[in-house]
Amino acid sequence: LGARINGALQALSKASVIDEKAVDALLREVCSALLESDVNVMLVQKMRQNVKKRVNMDELASSANKRKVIQNAVFEELCGLVDPGVQPWKPQKGKQNVIMFVGLQGSGKTTSCTKLAVYYKRKGMKVGLVCADTFRAGAFDQLKQNASRAHVPFYGDYSETDPVQIAIEGVAQFKKSKFDLIIVDTSGRHKQEAELFAEMEQIAAAVKPNNTIFVMDGTIGQAADSQARAFKESVDIGSIIITKMDGHAKGGGAISAVAATGSPIEFIGTGEHMHDLDKFSARPFISKLLGMGDISGLVETVQDMHMEKNEDMMKNLAKGVFTLKDMRDQLQTIMNMGPLNKIMGMMPGMSPDMMKGFDADESTRRLRSYMCVFDSMTELELNSDGKMFEEESRLRRVARGSGVRLVEIQALLYQHKQFGQIVKKMGGPKGMLSKMNPNA
Ligand code: GDP
Ligand code: MG
Image (tube, rainbow, N blue to C red; front, top):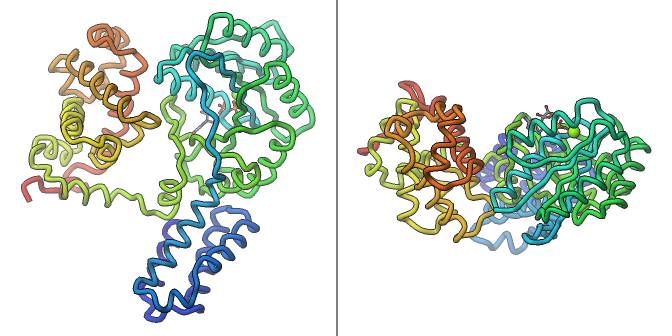
């Protein structure tokens, strides 16, 4: 999709006369690309009309920057499609918040429950998971396994067959122990069946969730619209998580889900790992959909940033190597530079996601704690790719030494590993990183 829309926008930039015909041609191209990307037909029509309304031809004729005007109109309209203008519900620490997950079987509920638990645990909340899925054999074992790996307390019952009963008991137990956040995982069916919706309604009535999160598989294409509608009719959807956006998901389904429910997407799932949960926001999502957030931008930014100070690291990167020490040095540079979140996304090895959902103070605190983690590592560990921390005892030693929670260190190592993989792919004698000359 990105390539096609970019192509259309570029064609527009080259067209010498920007008249109604040129705009129509661009819109036709954009619309067929959106349809190809599984965006709902009605929505595509609407966006086309809105762009035409937004772009006033007479004003355009006198405007010095015609192309920009049209490009912006398309971009803004697309952003509007995934932004319902409502803020997602947020749990408050110190209260016993309950979140219920709904969605079809295989959509990624259980996985996303764990990811969300980890996300709020990192924010300092006491989080518990309840398995109210008695429909699928092995559902409890799956949640139990995920939860233990994430060190999150969980509740389930092999002998109880009534999911409503389990939900009631699990929530009550965690509430009694003053948990801040209780996440209830429910079952799904393959189809949007009556029994599924009845069960969801019963669980909702029994535990009275503060928020219901609808989980949708991002790869289901045109089915997204009717699926989201069906769920919206029987439960009060607060927010949405779109999963499997790491693969070849086209993104159109996400747009349909928002349009059908009027609810905001809060997160997207970008992998099977418990840290693969990204905060959603419309503009970066659309930029990515349009192919604007590509890696070449990153390389340019790096060159702009006088990286000579980090010459050793640049040499490493060019070789396809990214050590923990490289990461530490990057963080150090960032700490000395200010407006954290902004800079974060521009540095090789750092991701804006690392601080996702954290305000400036929290981010600074977190960076300091990362420095404590590095201080607790040996020289051997710092110069490594981090794999040796698969040894739990090593991890625990660093956690003890730094006073930083295990889950936080795991997140740091995961972030490091992610970038390490990119460096490996892009580095080496033939890789694009090897063309970056730190002395240039
Ligand atoms: P549930 O039936 O709704 O509870 O779905 P599960 O959580 O069991 O997930 C179904 C499958 O999708 C599992 O194999 C997950 O590992 C996988 N999955 C879930 N979320 C993601 C994601 O964001 N990316 C990828 N690649 N796989 C995911
Ligand atoms: Mg499940």
